[in-house]
Image (tube, rainbow, N blue to C red; front, side):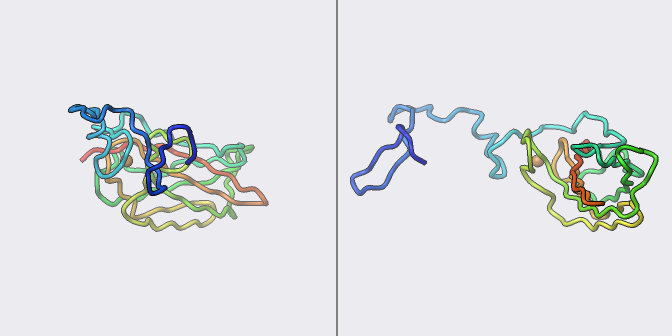
Length: 170
Ligand SMILES: [Cu+2]
């Protein structure tokens, strides 16, 4: 990182210039303690997510539509659960895509626009057959909004759909 805030030490190494006065007794903002919980420098939800899970999610360019076939309601906290989805043609949403290749990842975004702030503590098992995606071994270990990311490939098209899920209840 190069910038005007840089200072060079006598031995040539660099320190980041800190704005606080050297003898301040209150140099750390209170919210820093909560944000550093579990080593994550980001917002921590304090309770269950209030959103209602949608029953479908389209891919970015609407080539595909992922429909929820089964999902526990509510989703259990820190317990393994399974879910099933079906991949449909985005232009003909009653037409399933039997030869879709699908990979799914689960994580929490914590406000990130792309990618996940963190994933699950387990690897789920995913099987796709005739456009039906069966996932077992999902487990959400933090209250808040989780997201399933479906990467779908078929007929020369590769598109991604995101489905937000609320976590959780006992
Ligand atoms: Cu989280």
